[in-house]
Image (cartoon, rainbow, N blue to C red; front, side, top):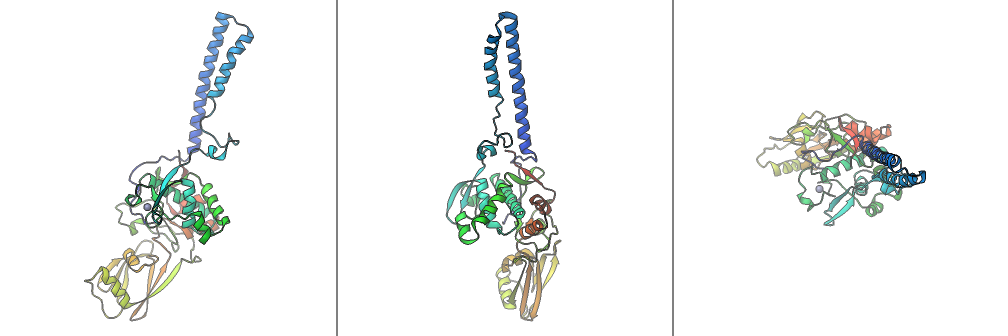
Length: 378
Ligand SMILES: [Zn+2]
């Protein structure tokens, strides 16, 4: 994801015990109804005893409608999973959240059920071979992001033509249809596993201070994530997006890449941005400063110093965790460790942690500092 803005407003209200809270309100309402109804029946019976002196069967006839009324009043409005296992599953769960999704590839906006949409996101964002708990962490991050988009948290949606979210991974988050997934990426079993990850985290999101977080994630951190402030021009530190060390991610295919460039190629590319810069005949470049996580902060090429993030973009590198080697005076070998901006949750790291026995909540709390993993209160 490429997200530059962070939550500015309070929107969706979430509560760690959302479901319990709803249930408590319902019970209390029922109790009030019950007391009110009992007092009515008591008054009526008193009146009968004192004034009318009716027979027992008449009293029964009077009480019976009241009892029926009571039954009607104490019937719970909202379906409840535990108390009503005989209800169809969809009714037990409560109302579905829907959102509008813009698919730029098809120039199409469709209305989707949130949980169905999320299966396509997880399928596109993480390999199905990853551990179930890692897939669940991805599902929660994707749900948090989708709802944050619905709430208007993450900047402009002008390119969405009025839709809540789009399927462009460069703008929002990737998405793939079931048909396409089965054609290219995986089996029915794989799809079922992803559905399970979404279903088992239904309505769960990540919050900080009661607000949905911006759940940035990336492919491979190289073993340590980056502080968001090192990557984007953000005026204030984001407390939950700090640099954290994680498990070894070197066994994943995205871990390391070595690219060889000629000095001429490097000069030509840098000149496109800095036409005034001076470059000698032979290789003349060096890393000048590192960020807190050991990634490149600034790098000097000839007479110009540029940010590591810009250097990464200019050369299409996997990350800013860069080291340089010079096999000859005319060539440069660039080695990158990890894949992505390095901020927030590492997907490979999530899988590695899951293999160590971490739950999806543990994984999310490892990568997003000081957060709560909780259910949305609908
Ligand atoms: Zn978008």
